[in-house]
Image (cartoon, rainbow, N blue to C red; front, side, top):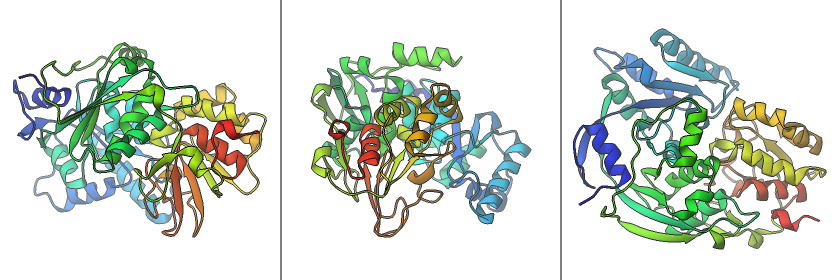
Length: 417
C-alpha cells in the first residue's frame, strides 16, 4: 500500500520506511518559526521551567516580529526586547519589521520535503512548496527547540483534484473560501488537505500560498501541494534546493476525495462570524462598510496589490471608508513602490502601512470599533477578531475588498460604474 505526501514527509522525518494514518512517530523537525504573538511566553518557560535549558540547534530557529510592529505600547516594546535579546544571545535568525512571518518564511526559508513547526496556526501555508508546515503551541515549540524533535500523529489526507482554470475576476482566495464553505470549518479536522490535478498548472505561487494558508480554517493539520515546475522555479529564483520532492503514490489511501472545477468558482464572501458562512459576493452587495483591509499572510503579496491597484486606479476611496493597504513583506513593498502601486493607492486615498499583520491580527493599528463593519483579505472573521467584540468582519478577495472600499459597501469589481 502506498503513502500520501504527508505520510512520506513524516516517514522521512521519523527515519522510517513507512507510516500510516493514526500512527504516532517521533520526528526530527527541520525548522522552527515563532513570532511575537507568543515567543515571549516560550522564553519565560525556557528560563523558568527547564532544569537544564539548552537549544538543540539555533540554526533551525527563525524568529519574526510581525504582529505588533512597531511596538504599540510599553508592554509590547518589552516583549519585543525580550525576543530580540534572546535571539542575539543564542544566534537565532531574527527579523523585525521585515514582514509577516509566513511570507518571510516562504521568501527565505521553506524547502520542499521539510517538516516545519510554527508557533502560528497558518504555518500550513508552507505546503505551497511541498513542505509539511503545522502550527504548534508554546509547550510543543519549546520541546522541539530544546530537543530538536517532537511527536506527530500521522493525519489522514483529504485530496482535492483541481481541473480547469479560474475565470477572469475570480481568484485563489475565492477558491479556498469556496472549498471551506463546502466542507465546513471542521471538515478537515486534524487531516492533511492535498491539492493535485491539471488545474494546478494555472495557479501561481501566490495562489498556492493563499490556498494552503487558509486550510487551517477548515481544521486542517497541514496542507500540501507537489513541488512541480512552478514551485521549483520559485525556489531556484531564491537560491534554495529541495530537501525531498514527494508526491502521493497511486495506491495511497485518502479519507475523502473531491473534484473541484475551477471554471465554476465565483467571487464569494464569508459573512460574520464564521469562515464557512459563505455566500456569493453579490448576495452581500449593498452592505455598508466602515473599513477595508488589503494585506495579511493570505493576500498581501505583490499579485494582490496589483489586482487592487488596477481596480482603484483613477478612482477614490469612499469618503466614509478607511482603506488599509498593508504589503506582506518589505520585499513586496519595495516591488510595489517600483511598479507605482503604492502611489496609486495613496492617490486614491488609501492608508498604506508598513509590512505587518495589521488589522488581521486585530490588536494593532486599524482595529474597528463597536458596531463597525470591515471587509478584509485577512484570515479570520470570528467575533471580535478585528477589534471590538460587537463588530463585523467579512472575508473576500483583494478585488472585492478594493471594489468595496471604493463603493462604500460590499461590491464586486464588475459592479463599479
